View 1: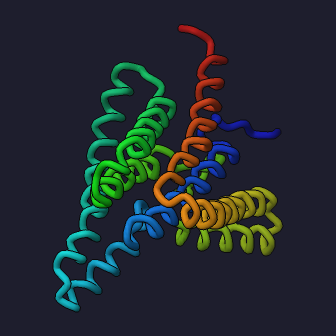
View 2: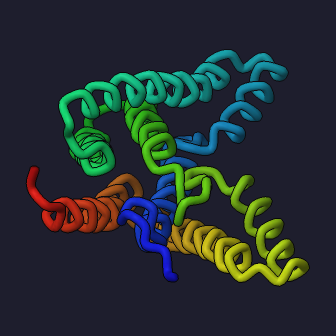
View 3: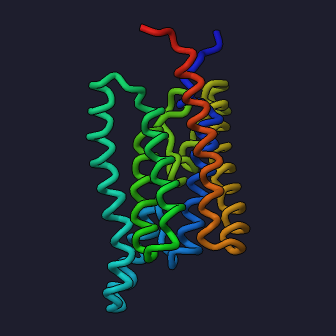
Length: 224
């Protein structure tokens, strides 16, 4: 029997999220002085690099997205508890919050210094990575690709060796998220180099698509 999954675990949502992540991290790298919104490993490396060189201000600038990414985790925990207690749809509500933060940054990024922009985007990326954690019932990452590269290769090879079609399909699904991330990087490179900070507006397109998909599923649910 074919197993069905909720929309927020579906492939189209995962592809949209990983596209957003590839786009967002490339955007911040190109327009926010080499910092990343979601890939905190890169921020940690540059933080240590500038500390070693004695560039304290540069080191601090890479510490800002790390701090706000951590704050995003705390906020997500509290927000999820509050939404679930009130029986609000968690994934749809979380997606609305992420979209609201992106829109806020779009409107204010020209008025504030880069540290403001990267702080808000790191906060949004943190909410995203914690809110959407499964693809067709299996864990995956939608902000950083290291785990996806590992899982895609392992599950696919395991499926081949054990003749397990479930593992094969799951490995391929995660591989598609890597391709989607790459597409996000390519599109963001083209738009960010051309439009600079105004390229952030394009990120609202996949964000609104995710909201629409989650809202349509919510409307189909029987009223209690």
